[in-house]
Amino acid sequence: MAVPSARPRARRRPLVAALFSALALAATAVPAGAAPTADFAPVPPHNPYAGPDGTATMHGDTGSSDTTPLAGPGAGNLSSKRVALASACPTVLVGSDGHPVVLCTPIFGQVPTVHLLDPADGSSLTSLQLTKGSLLGGVYAYLDNEDRLVVVDGSRSLLRVAHRKDASGKWRLSVDRSLSLASAVPADDAVTGLSPDWQGRVWFATGNGVVGLADDRTGQVSTLRLPAGERIANSISTAPEGTAVTSTHATYLLTAGADGTPAIAWRQAYDRGRARKPGLLSWGSGSTPTFLGPKTGTDYVAIVDNADTTVRLKVYRTDGGTEVCSIPVLQAAGGPGSENSPIGAGNSVFVAGTYGYPYPALPDGAGPSVPSSADFAGGLTRVDIRPDGTGCATVWDNTLRSAAVPKLSTATNTLHTVVRDPLIPGTRGTGVLDPYRYVQIDPETGRVTRSRQVGVGSLYDTLQMAGTVAPDGSYLQGTVTGVLRITAG
Image 1 (tube, rainbow, N blue to C red):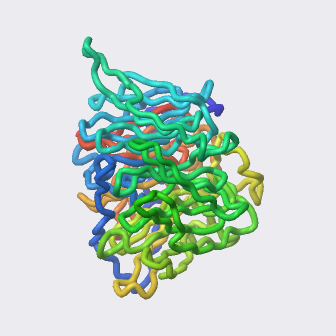
Image 2: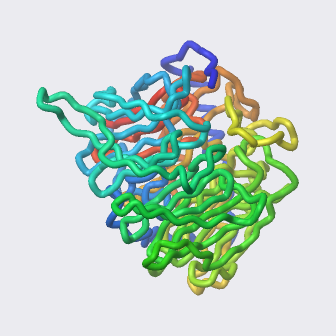
Image 3: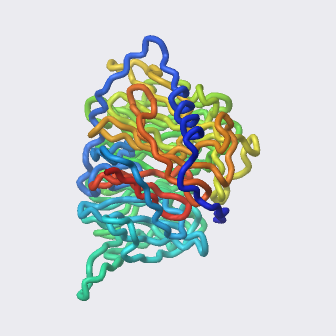
């Protein structure tokens, strides 16, 4: 992964900053008659075999709601610090002890590396290299209930990586437990997603369409293969009702009995379009499926399809898989595509657009995009499921250019993300000198309420990776070269 260099600029001229602010405020279109609600609850229940809600997985919890019970940067002047790790760091998690655990891929060598960060300033306390695999193999990981990073490395081994101080008082990372998945995952395949179930077993999915359940306490591994031609390019989500998997053709709910054998409870195909689009990493939905709902927090499963001209939010009932709604999203921005998992809380879903986002590298087998390139459109849409579950309605739809997976704080009802502004206001192209801003967004209206420039140039590219709110209120955002630490006060 090559990252072009650029000299960061500390501050944008006031006139340009004002223009960016005006553009952000003008970007929101609220449909007449919309009736937004502030009740962004409940969220998926806590998984007893995962770390703290909001920080245990890339998408916050094992239901992939992309919500957090933590507030994020509060009152006072916003500031940011770039923690340089010479790596792309898509997975930023925080355990119950407050220590961030980060899974990164170095620019040179691309050997996955785990970093334990100092919660006070974000610096790396220690690191551990894992066995190298495919580009996306090992990107998705989670923290278990003992603050251990659970990940599958390039040797197809399920690892639990712990952090503790040694006799001299220095922090160390070490593998507490390992289970080979080589008997279940072919040598030419790699695990793309994993998540624990409510019995402590680990569900996993591979790029070539194998879904499995592993128990690293007993050594038992069972698998199921999806229909021929179906790949899995995103992570998976778990809830008490089962495991949601979205392949390049369909969304599934899988269950398993006491013997650990996976079975398909339901399957719903979606419109995958005629090809991969620019700004997406595979041909099909870019969604890690999201559990949400007004009763249990897992009443529904939501994804975004890959239809050619207008993508649609698809919401299914977890119980039985019947479709609740199929509604167009990202229309204001005009970019038909999202590589990001939707945010889900209560009856509300938020979808961020990635159409045209320039990735420096693509996974093996991604294939050509149609068209071959496009300007980065962005867009952010809020859709609410009707209280009686009979359909959905758009609440607002804007042109905000989120360059990361947004997170919703249910503590303050605030959306957090980093946006990529055009170098020339009013344009949609991207370049190596683009400025990046941390923003807070009102989920009721979609309007930016607070922002702070965090850097200029490719060193600050957040590459549609997920941010994480830490217990101390800092916002930790992975970039192509490390981690941004955004604080207030």
